[in-house]
Amino acid sequence: MKIIYTSEDNFRDRFDEILQRGKMDMDTVGGIVGTILGEIRESGDEALMEHIARFDRWEPKSAEDLVIDADEMAMAYKAIDDKVRDALHLAYERIESYHKKSLPRSWFDYEENGIVTGQKVTPVDRAGLYIPGGKAAYPSSLLMNAIPALVAGVKEIVVTTPTPDREINTLLLAACHLCGIERLYRVGGASAIGAMAYGTETIPKVDVITGPGNIFVATAKKMVYGEVDIDMIAGPSEIGILADTSARADWVAIDLLSQAEHDEMASSILITDDAQLAIEVSGEVEGQIESLERKDIALKSIVERGAIIVANDMIEAVELMNEIAPEHLEVMTSAPMELVPYIKHAGAIFLGHYTPEPIGDYIAGPNHTLPTGGTAKFYSPLSVENFMKKSSIIMMSREGMSEIGEACATIARIEGLTAHEKSVLVRL
View 1 (cartoon, rainbow, N blue to C red):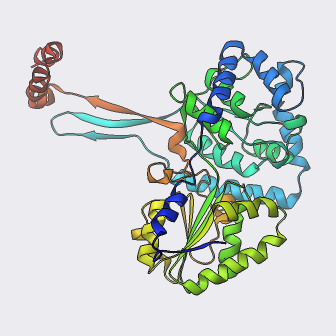
View 2 (view 1 turned 30 degrees about the vertical axis):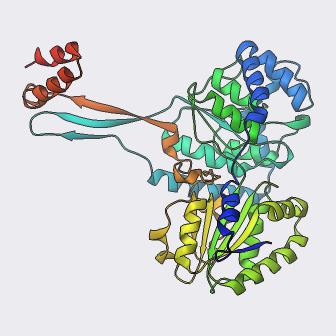
View 3 (view 1 turned 120 degrees about the horizontal axis):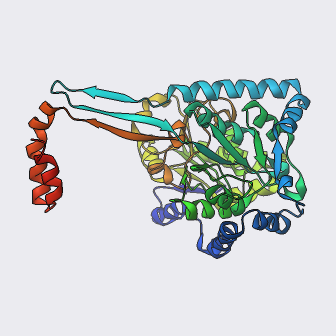
């Protein structure tokens, strides 16, 4: 694993390459995605079935073939191993508990002059969840997207997932049953995003679309934004680790590899002030990668997108990590809480030597749908607020209008909007 020192003359050039890690060339697939979305908008279910035959290698005979109902999900739930079922339930309980704590509330402020201002928070009517599918489906993604919607109070949840060769993951079905999902649709890729954004004869139009996907899914979400809301445009997974001399090299190495095994385009970056630790971690990565089932994927990720940076001190290390703004940030130092005030940009922050990133993927409670590619500088993790909207509340009394109305009319007048001005003045 390559090691870069901040003292190198060309450090900034090499670091700037790291900052470009999340760039997705959506222009390369924009034409294809645009065509797919257009076909869905024009032909609905007919286009969906054509796309499934083309991309997923099976031919639906009718629109009914697109639907997996609640009975099939219930059967899958009953069939899973007891230990797996218990783990899914524990994850559900912890995710639900965490998101209930962050539930926004409606509020009202009553002023003495009779003016009332406030905020009304309302869930969207229908949410669409995109869950990656096939043999490598992720039930955790279903939990992380469905539970915040349920906590928000969304009444109807639409779930789509690709089923290459018509295969579907049993654990995904079990997770759907656990979340009370009534219908799951066998549709993936940009086609699924289009179906949820525009609606078809079988799949209803939604108000917001959330969930991870490849560059085709990300591009489709970007293109339909405005027709519906979306959570974020996420790219390949990534991890940043801040570590000092107290960190164990073997633990740091396996945590770096935990993201590298996701995807050849995943990024794993360690920043430390300990040059010896950097050398030891590099060696551990090379040794441990040999035992991974997804060795080839992890190796390409580490070689092309992995890096170890040796900084002068931990303050410089944090400053560099803030520029990276990683999706996941582990702080493996002797006093991790002391660095928290200096950390500005990260999707999720994992503090201490006993808090590896995978604990956040599955069971801790906070959401694992996180901003990538530096977008943590302006995006937040998926939350209940993605499934809710806010309305402002304003109520004026006669006394309140008398108190602030003249100032309002003045501003309207200087902007040249005489009807605005008169609307206020007639009430004074």
